[in-house]
Amino acid sequence: MSLRPGGAALNNAELLAGLFWLGLGLFIVWAGQDLGVGTRGTPGSGFLVFWAGLLMCGFSLAIVAAALKRGGPSLGSLWAGARWGKVLIVLVSLAAYAVLLDIVGFLIATAPLLLILLRAVDPVPWRTAVPIALVATIGTWWVLKRALLIQLPSGVFEIG
Image 1 (spheres, one colour):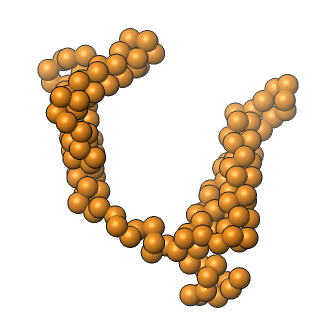
Image 2 (tube, rainbow, N blue to C red; image 1 turned 90 degrees about the horizontal axis):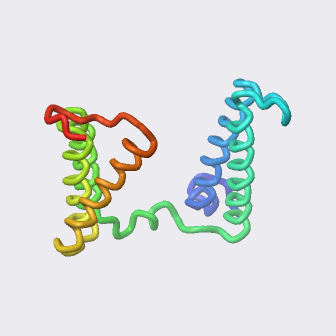
Image 3 (cartoon, rainbow, N blue to C red; image 1 turned 90 degrees about the vertical axis):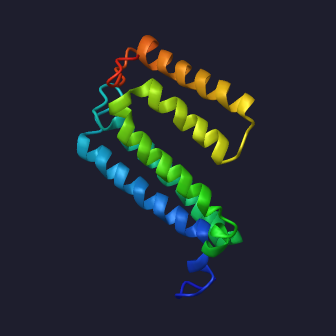
């Protein structure tokens, strides 16, 4: 397997992704050590971070090994057939949601976002999209606000 620019290994999307996650995992291991791992009996604040980073490193090494052994798709093939219009709709919708969340509140901002995503990305009928958007929004609000006691923005209308 060639590791030169333009070679098979450098155009292997799985190899590059595995190396990316390995680097991130190593950073997380370092951050966990920096926070202080502690011991099993008295874990430090970095205990969970350290072990999660090691787990990430193990999984990413398995991906790298498989990519080196069997190869993988090219980077270009991952983007073939991408529906860029739908990607743009999602990005614009999320940006608008981020702007409107504090202004109009969680309930009023989230229901339209879900409705737009359900209808625009992989269209479902209105009779399905509206109940899903409302039930998901109210259900999420109830779990976060009432069950977990997390403060959510209520906006200028003080709803929620």
